[in-house]
Length: 205
Image (cartoon, rainbow, N blue to C red; front, top):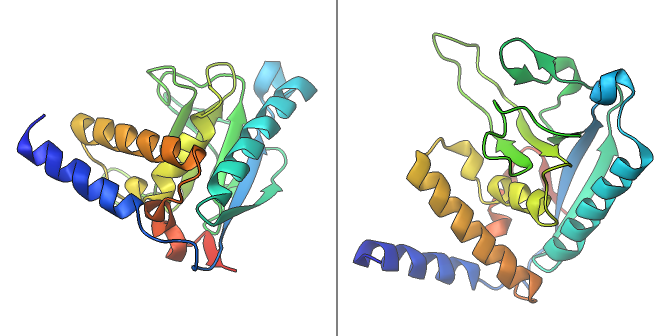
């Protein structure tokens, strides 16, 4: 490990040690969309929905340690549009929530490493596109592990998804967040997860 790596690790640990015990609860709004197009248009089954509920409940318990609560509501009828790449039609998305799309398995354009999850933040307009103002999480239940959903939440909570780092930056964020999630699961509040307090989908209780 280089001196720069050691400095970064020390900084990350210092942020994570911040005191959250006396701070107000952060309430995060999540809009859940169960893929209407899954299983040839039949949608997700009861067992798959129960599997999602178990992942969300685990995230609820773990993030409560850092003073983060979830306000979860459902949006019916959402699906992925396939036009050489996968996207959720804008009519199903909202700027005031994290848009969580749940399906059986994700396409390789979203999840090429088969981790079962992907988180995407807003993108500014460019010459090629009009931009994207939404915060999204894609969850593929077949490949997801019991920590996948909270890992994707962490990228939004630490504001990782406001930037577009290279491969090295993504790897560092993954390792850092997984370390913080491990500490949180063992009872340590993580102040860095509260960086989202002023995000458009979060509010102080």
